[in-house]
Image 1 (cartoon, rainbow, N blue to C red):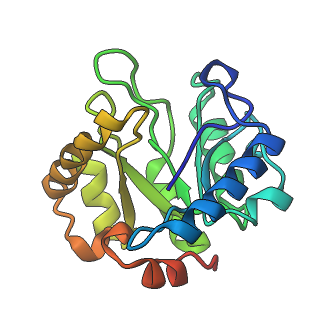
Image 2 (spheres, rainbow, N blue to C red):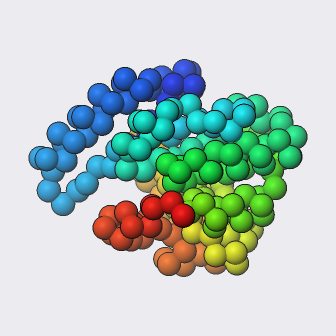
Image 3 (cartoon, rainbow, N blue to C red):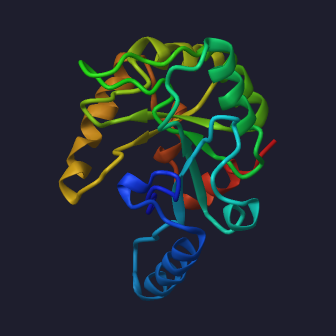
Length: 203
């Protein structure tokens, strides 16, 4: 899945809707030539302070996989941060919440959020939580992976790759999931695309 940042994260060259549409066209063209590999049209969409997403539903519905995340206002109260994420998760096109607690190991503490409540909403809305394999994130942590398993919440293990060498970090995400007692059935990207696609229908 090609999950470039979207427009609110200008520092990372976030895609405007026009640029994302152009990228989607190129991915479609590539998929016509590829054999044995399918590229998913996706984006890492910013969750704004009030819980809205920074792309319109009109373009979100054209994506195969919609990842959403927080990159600003980490200092909101526990209640406001939780409500922010819940509003985003109620968007019918959101598939996954990336690096759910926002931590950066030895750099930034997790933001205040009621993760148990977030997991309950994930079950209600058909949203998945990310286990981010970047060594500086490893978010969800092992205890939260175990809580997800106990509550029946499925996760996706992602590299959060910003370069090709970052794909090698996948093993750290697998290790993190295993520390949290997760098994292949708990991880949605252990499935084929055909099976996974059926799991992406919002409840």
